[in-house]
Length: 236
Image (cartoon, rainbow, N blue to C red):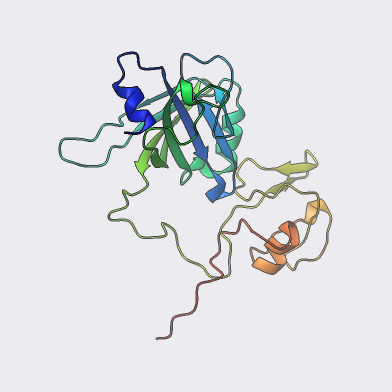
């Protein structure tokens, strides 16, 4: 019997802590970690990761009697406006991975029984659609990562050489870049034209190509391109 099972069946079971990870790395963003547990007023750590206390509401995790995968709803407080900036930068976070981790307080880092492997099965979902956004909260519908029946993979057109990211726009009125509709994560000061030549900020244009676009801005290594350079040409 696992530690989780033993604790769950105990007559004096410990408080269950709900931890959430919003992983936007697949769409060029970062990983954001929250806890909604009412017992916590300060950040908690589990497995070396810090989870910030944030007002979060989730529902709809239960499996239906027909056996269909649940489509949970996620509502996160947006009072500070920080989350709005992330949503605007990364296309409503559609496609980002959302994980729900449940464990007991006794297994959190710093506790006598700390154990990063002691948790209930992790629920892994993807952001399916943003359904509401205002100054108070942002709400999404989630879909199970395995619930992909009837979908084409990938869920967008496969283009070998051209990136489909929306690049930043230079605003001559403010003398700065406008990122409100950009999905490309580049925010550096180096600017290049469509041929990859160094230019001033007002002439900054991305070629949408790997070498003259991505490599010039991000260097060699992992690139946040939305092109599929590894796709070969099909002979007909």
